[in-house]
Image 1 (spheres, rainbow, N blue to C red):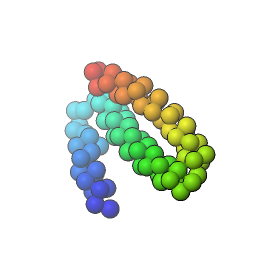
Image 2: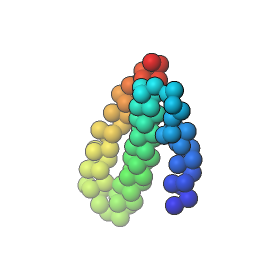
Image 3: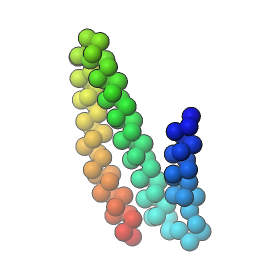
Image 4: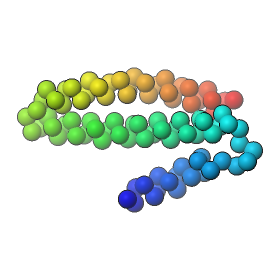
Length: 88
């Protein structure tokens, strides 16, 4: 629960834009936060896959890792788009 409060404090300035903030800046901030969440979830899921593999379920662990590859491949595209939005 403490991590959620820290995250909220970290992203509060991004999620509560000043009146003069452009909509593209708001969208860029939102996407940045979502990308950070996606990365954290992928890391957590990968840790779970490691644990599953250590219990003898290598096939399931590999299946999870294969699906995580999609998240990883989209990470660069999303990051690039966020940077472009922040330039506007």
